[in-house]
Image 1 (tube, one colour):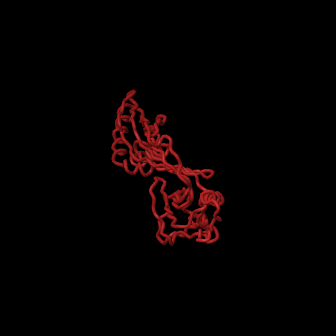
Image 2 (tube, one colour):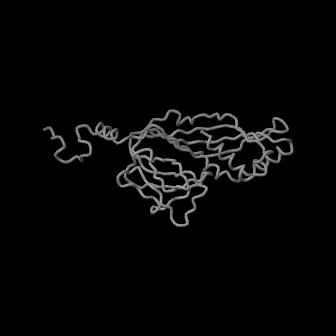
Image 3 (cartoon, helix red, strand yellow):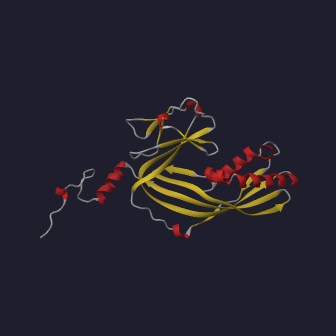
Length: 258
């Protein structure tokens, strides 16, 4: 669950310290296996009753063919939909309502009409937030992993490690934002975010390697998205004797027994 964080750290170090982490003599960045414990209060989560929930899609975006068309992964509920450009570094830039044209015949389909002057370079995904009918719960976990930095000699390793530490600490909030993730398949969705990131200890296993121990708290929202037909079936079970889509009236109320 920390793959996005690992990618964000590697990307940040290469962009902030290109002379140290890119090129033929670059310092190598690797990670140990991620180990975690589930929060005791959320280790056995129970999904709530199906109802309106937030869904997130990450759709591939090509700046040279920005219009699309695009399609949401699940049928949306009526209501507001928010569309953002997502950069390769994880930053989100909101599109105006006028820049997103929804298909009147298919509520899940839309196209993008960028405003004049809208910068599209550097963005590779659309981040779409919308409502669905789903059963959902949350799961929290505490993770431990180690970041290893190695270079060609002891002095290069020490320099790369200390400057990397400066970059990571100063840009901690940006790392947290970039470490969020969303996964969707076959009607299930998991949206995760790293809530906290701590640098807990370090070591020098040998002269050309430094290790930084990290601890992170992750919260994942787990959903099973409900399709239209299943939603009607659920409504029928929750309201026995009532026609789906028909409001209860006075005549529907059983007569009182005297």
